[in-house]
Length: 76
Image (cartoon, rainbow, N blue to C red; front, side, top):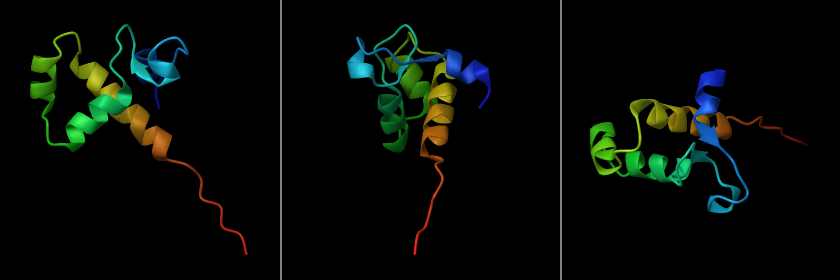
């Protein structure tokens, strides 16, 4: 993932229990992903949360994609 995406995501133990958030907000990455998974459009999210940007939502998606891309190790 490009560093640009990481700059929009922050992890601070004092904010939202250390869960990844959109920088400068208390909007968790998981909140954005859940809204999209529930059928909300980017336009709807941006209307409801006017402090977010398209780049914030794209960064949340990229962060979530990277977080789920883990190595699978099989053993005998």
